[in-house]
Length: 121
Image (cartoon, rainbow, N blue to C red; front, side, top):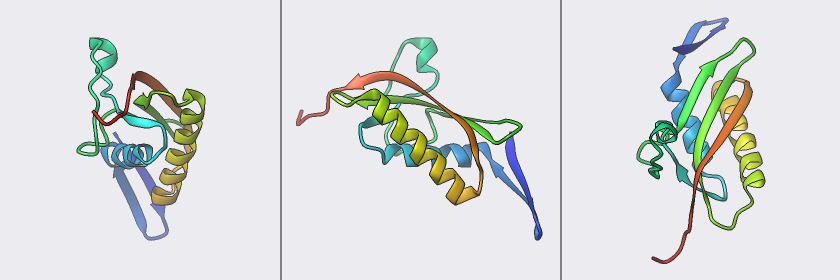
């Protein structure tokens, strides 16, 4: 599915994968986030940490009547406060999608799939 906007110059269609990639890249810039987890990991019980190679994985975008619903599957860094990480993610992803695409997000759902200890190992 894709998001379509009509401007005075014509119609603009943006693929959901493009929006998911932008949302994933914005999320990866947030403090406390160790990486993205693939959505399938919830069903399989396997948490695979994804890095910047494919930031759109771990992000699901759906069009709603009022805007977009974005689902993020994440892995947080050990020792960070999950509610603060989630609030920062919502703010950053919402701001990024509004500034880049002019799209409002109706809701941003966050699923924490794991915790990773970051260290020198």
